[in-house]
Length: 193
Image (cartoon, rainbow, N blue to C red; front, side, top):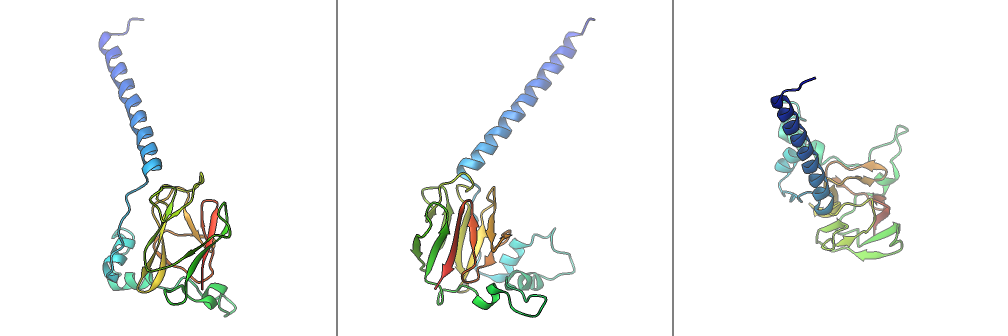
């Protein structure tokens, strides 16, 4: 069979483009894993935060921004079907007045305590994090704890393996109940009095 030179040239160029696409995909994945995603600052006004937490494509057009803000600031703890409060609801939300320390309950640094102030705490593998966790399941910039309207909030920073609060994956900034378990990689911790 005689294959024209033009066909061979087109096949070579197509193969070369495909190869470069794979190389760029690998470089992008490595860059994301090594340097993490860009850290976005939390806005202080409730309406812009609600708009950022619920993109326009996720909120129906009939729902006003105020309703989205109310859904965003709704407490995490819910009443159980039997009408009793869950342990998280009984404990209350962690605030700057009732929370003084972060206690690591499992992982390589189990038993370690960190005093809490008013500063934001970043968590990840990066050496510039406030709480450095070095394990294979923690991203470079994994999550952060911050005071927002005097309540401690947990925000996942687009980590690969996720951040979990009381067994549920955190997708938007979420209030942290006192003594609720936060799991990042192989490390678990709680906010305590």
